[in-house]
Image 1 (tube, one colour):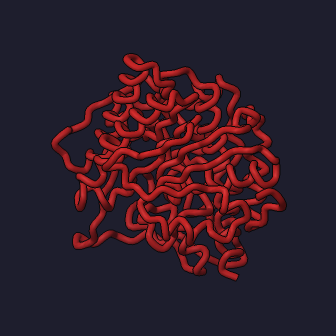
Image 2 (cartoon, one colour; image 1 turned 30 degrees about the vertical axis):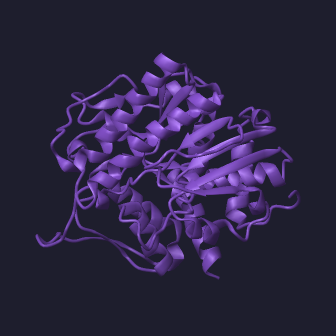
Length: 360
């Protein structure tokens, strides 16, 4: 189906922004992209973008969306023009995916990335990064794909020995018996597996090591991460309450910068290599982020309040970040011609505006 692509104005602007990055989009013409985890926060933007280039830019690209729950995917995308062009496969990746047609690109984005799962269902956290990754790499080998992109994480760096910029060659200590490391260790294994398939079977793998990324499609009702909670507070007109001094720092990358980076790696990255996808310039403390959000909307008259966390409250802190300034370095990705354009003020402003538009 071709024609006008109707969506939330913020999404429309974001799709135009991504397309303007000049990422050799002609490579998508007459191609098939298989995307796992297709209704997650990050991957859903890839779905939106592929529908956008198909319906607005008239690029004939087919999407195969692999999801754990078909109904959830239909609920999110079913009313969008071009949806009928998507092939949906319900598979949690514990079994091989059976596909008869050709596949040109595979983007493996399925993962249980939220820390709330690490101690509750660690085996389920491991599966998509290990067993699922293996099944997809076997499929990539069989289909002789043009490109395979693994969504990895900057968590693979563990606790580096030095502060400052962390490039793709830096690695630190990680306790393999600490169950909270099930996610980061399985991402390390996924990367090694990708490299092995490249060495032994010449599968053209590339790896995106993703740092903190935010998007309008975040689930502010269920996402336990602090930045999602902050957005929820702003939308509800509530003060932001910090249960610490807010000194821990993160880099925050807006989704348009991230998606442009993913495709840049997929199309132009070196085979068998990993790239940090992050906005190094937006390295701010949790308190600075909270204050920025309240300042974007002065008419709401909201404040940042610090309170002591009670001992009964369940909280998992990233110990690798406490008392340190470890910043993922994006120079390797920049060398491909990519750049981060969106600062936290503009990016989180888009997120809040999108949610408020949806709530009207």
